[in-house]
Image (cartoon, rainbow, N blue to C red):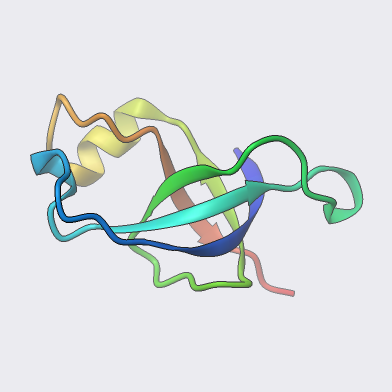
Length: 85
């Protein structure tokens, strides 16, 4: 699990069938003192996070496959929670 800042939302007209109707966010990892580190990633969101929110994201593949009910989804990151300030 890692904390990340939601930078925005992704719109896609062509995507894997497991992602149809799913909300995708651009998330920037946060390091010590909530400073941005590394490259941004795409994360699937079912919690309603929005731009400027800090979220906990995970790359737990089994959990994501269960969430999507799809065994071959190419998605990797997904939101576990929205950090309460």
